[in-house]
Structures are given as structure tokens and as C-alpha cells.
Length: 116
Image (cartoon, rainbow, N blue to C red; front, side, top):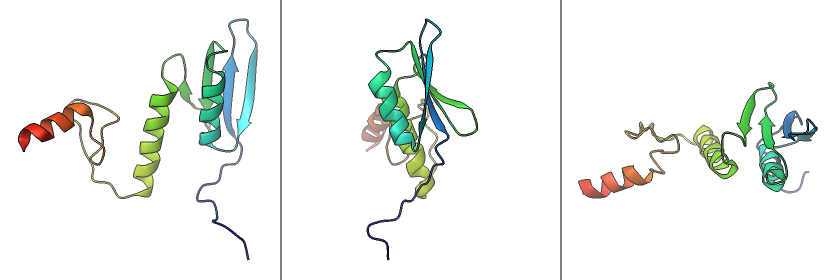
């Protein structure tokens, strides 16, 4: 009988963190989870020109040249939570992609307070 909890998600190691330098040098690190990929980007983003997270389909899902890793990680957590929980659909009038029915953006929170 196994001890502890069984993992709820499994990755096949095909999530890749690409660390790119202006000099043309690059390093690719295989990761077993998005959490580990986020950690690697946070560790290396100050020392490389661009850090990218590439999913198992070869699509770049994060690039430090265009996004902040903390913001991306927060949105990834929200998306992961939405997939695991039945959440009421919410359309933010301010087009904030990080605004959810259970976690409103600042503008929607202010609107909700005004309406009370």
C-alpha cells in the first residue's frame, strides 16, 4: 500500500525552460512540472537575456521579454484552479485577464463596494 498522497498531476518531462543569451548561447532545461519551470525562470531571469517556458507541444507559453513571471504564474494558478473547480463564469468589464468571479480585480472590487 502506498504511503502519502498520490500526485494529482503528472508531467512527462517535456516542459522546457529555455535560457537565451545575446551572445547566441542557450540552455534548455527539461522540467517535470510547471512549478519547477517557474522556479527556474525566477532563479535565472536576472542573469540571461530571455527566459522562456515551452510546453510539451512546443508552444512558448511564457517569455520574459514580454511578461513578468510573477504575473504569469498567478494567472497560471488561476487557470489551474478554474480547471479543478466549477467556478462561475465572469466577464470583467475592464478586460482584466486576471479578474475572476471569486477573485475580482481592483476596479471590479471598487464597483462592488459602490453598488452596496
